[in-house]
Amino acid sequence: MALDQSFVGRTYPPTEPYEVGREKIREFAEAVGDANPAYTDAEAAQALGHPDVIAPPTFVFAITFKAAGQVVADPQLGLDYSRVVHGDQKFAYNRPVRAGDRLTVTSTIEKIRSMAGNEVLDIRGEVHDQDGEHVVTAWTKLVARAAEEA
Amino acid sequence: MTAKISYADVEVGTELPAQTFPVTRATLVQYAGASGDFNPIHWNERFAKEVGLPDVIAHGMFTMAEAIRVVTDWVGDPGAVVEYGVRFTRPVVVPDDDKGAVIEVSGKVAAKLDDHTVRVDLAATSAGQKVLGVSRAVVRLA
Image (cartoon, rainbow over all chains, first blue to last red; front, top):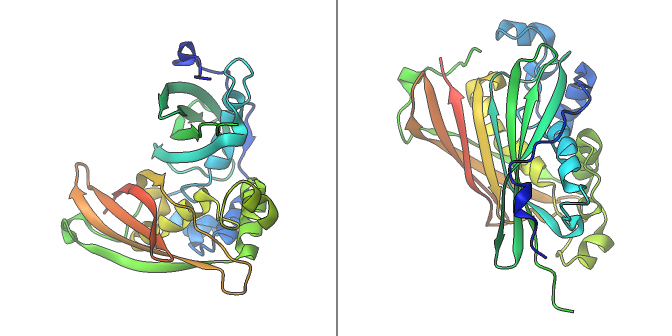
C-alpha cells in the first residue's frame, strides 16, 4: 500500500538530548579502525582548532537514525520496516560533533514516492547543540521494497 | 579547522592515496556494538540467508565510515569535511573465515569550489563490485 503523501513536510518533536562522550567516540573510532588522534587525544584535537576531541564524520548517524525511528515507527505512516533498506545517506556539517555536545534531532519527512512498487522515504534530521547552534544535517533515504506476490 | 593540504596545491584530477580496509565478522560485531545497529543481517548468517542475502553483509554505514578515511587521512583534520554523501548500491558480503572481505577505496578531486573547498569523488569496491555509488565529499583545505 502506498504511503500517505500528506505526511510530506511533517516534522516530529525534537528528541531528548544525546550527550556525546569521549569514550563513546573512542569506541566508535576503534570499531572503524581509525587511529586519527583528533578522535581520542584532546590536545591533538585542540592543535587542529577544536575545543575537545571530535567524532568521526559518520558517528552522528547513530543519533539521527534513532531519531528517524519516530518516523519509521509512526503507525499512521504505516511503513513496513521489515522491508526497508538504506538507500542513500548524506551529511552537511556546520562543525564536527565533539565530546560534551548535548545534541537534539528534529526529523522531517522531506519526500515520499513510489517507484516500481517500492516506497521511497526521505527523512531530514537537523542536529542542534545545547546552545541551539546547528551542528549537522543528515539526510537518510529509506527504500521499502515491494512485497512479493503471495 | 586545519587541513594539511593546501587548496593551491590541488587541481581537478588530483588523486588521493587509495586505501584498503579489511572487514571480518569480528569487525561487524564490534561495529554493531559501537554504532548501536544490531540488525541480525550483519552478524547472523541464518537470518541473512532467510531474508534473501547471500551471507552476512557489512553495515552500509561501516562502509561509509571507511570510505571517508581516504579523505580525512589526506587532509589530517576530520573536521575539515563539510559535506559527505553516498548511495548504497551493493552490499559488502562478509564470509565466516579469517580473511573476511576487503573494501577498496580511491578518491580524486572532481571540482574546486568556493572558500577553499574541493569536491572529492570516492569509489569503493569489494570483490570487484562497486559498493558505493555517487559517493562525494566536500572538504575545506588550507
